[in-house]
Image (cartoon, rainbow, N blue to C red; front, side, top):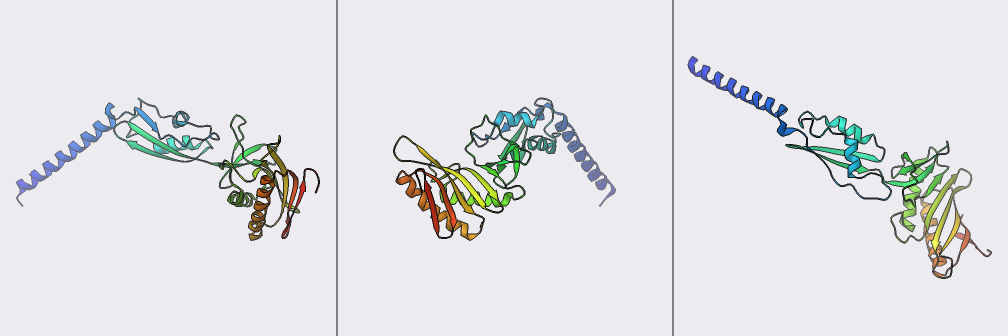
Length: 258
């Protein structure tokens, strides 16, 4: 290759690199790439979650109209959003020329938990306490106590309960769980209410002893209890207490006797 030809290639390469550098410099400083829109993908609506798209945009705190999309630090934006304990995960996407798209995943509260200090907080589906209860929010979540240090057992019980009786999203649960206590000596005690089909009283409230076995026997107990609960509701029988920890027997104390 002749020296002249090599020189031409070198000049062409240098010119191309110079153009690329100039283009990049222009892009990084051009007003065409200033963030003008923070688009929050509309989160799942819930009466239990006190955040909407507007509040999430506030958490992101992106200086709209002031920062270049190339320079926007997504990690910092992500950390600001995740600082709110209701948010479990966040996904950010730069859409050029001027938009940041934000989508979040909320923690889903499954219960309320009484803390040793006396406060009540939400418990998510993984058994993680994450926020003090907000009394302004509608909540039919069960209140748990006695499970300090044993959240997995509480969550496992609630999953089994949902299988047999319907969870908080079920419009017509067989038995609606109001609270659940755990004591090492006696095991599970649940407070429930269920609908009555006739008469002035619309619901009956009862306590249920379920024992300490959280293994396969619990499935059998809950299955038997399911049949008893349906019978009570169908025949309009109000009870005060149910013992479902006596092997094959389920003992019922009605509101008017045993």
